[in-house]
Length: 166
Image 1 (cartoon, rainbow, N blue to C red):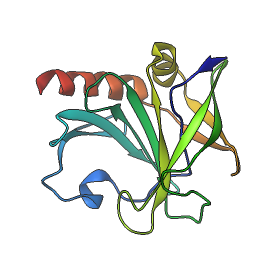
Image 2: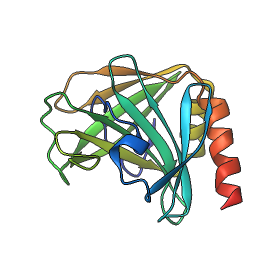
Image 3: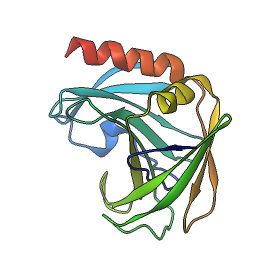
């Protein structure tokens, strides 16, 4: 098992970054393999985002200093997530199990949404995200859920190109 710096999840959001935030915060870069790539104007960093058929949204990118990656999931569905509260979480990607803490967020995209993010500096975690087709999340107090990772390889590569251009 590999320990991550920080993990957080919920089921996800129905809005994309361009719909959820002010237009001056994010700029659309391109769509790759069903993932939208955005530039975060304030943080000078790029991230990928995809909504699933249930309206859940997954985001992946780098922290402002680009030293750590994050993965966030948000939903309009009822959750027991409390902003700033941490809880234990497990993530299964391929044959690897990652354990860590989750940090909850509420209303971070727009009112009525909750979810969270994970932070990781583990290169194997990113490799697994790029090479596997799904991950299963096991929150401490919520039900387990699966996230489709189709297209992450090309989307993450496109985000790297986007980051290099900033």
